[in-house]
Image (cartoon, rainbow, N blue to C red; front, side, top):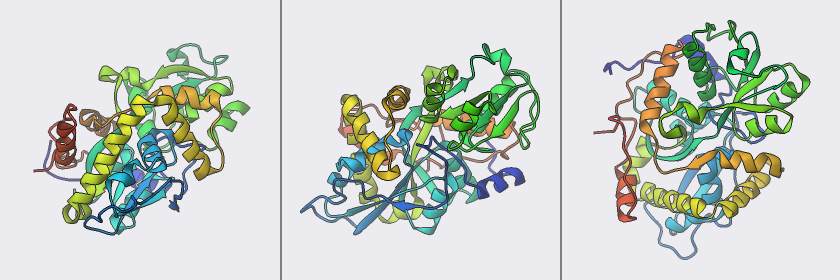
Length: 371
């Protein structure tokens, strides 16, 4: 990969100024404001020894694809590893706003999707963040109106929504269209398929009204469309090796990682323990995540949305680094991103040390690790 680091093209930079939807939203469109999350049972482990800082500020989205954060904070599993260091959680509704918060020191560690991770790293010339772990894979589907679309070829000439210009799902759909041999102008969305950038908050109503023929969207929006009569025509997981691709990473500011490695280690131990608990107790974890969502959004997800959405998401410690590189390449080929140098975006040494101690398999950085 070329050593020259480049920034986003003008169109994607403009999109980044808008609320970029980088991962699945619970109801859910993205705003730009962070909100303090008081949903946790305990944000500090009683009587524990304080680490190298009084507080660790953790950002995440109120989304099922951020189940590690939802459950880990809700159940106190992350706080337990931090001793007397307090967890200060904040929720975000946009990838760019979380990256801005990380750069400004408003948060130290964040759960976030691949597109804003790539964009944030490239735009900072590799200085802002490191990806230190994985969190979730999958949870993205193409849902269509079965009366209008019966096969994948029927998408030609139809109006299909993605959450935002240049976001993770938008890039994936544009790449899929190109693979079909169809032409679409990435910026306008016009072409053989009409790509309509539609906030996940309004997509279900637009689909129900008939103004959209389908949508390539994350969970739980996909399951909301199914509940409105839609049909899953394609699960994006089927397009990836071993049916896995990164949808949520764990990032940390390089400054915080350098100054407080003990805190980063503790948070990672908490996330590893949380993921282990989620995978061992899927029904309890699903209920915990939904309870956290209810506290954050004021409304729990109904069973006909929650159950299928939860099943389609894989909780994992593996950041699936090779798929991050592939997603960056897809954005480049779509004309949304100039080729970035992602070398150094990962630092998986702390996570692998924890996994080794737990007797779990270590994870790879696909050659994109820090020296």
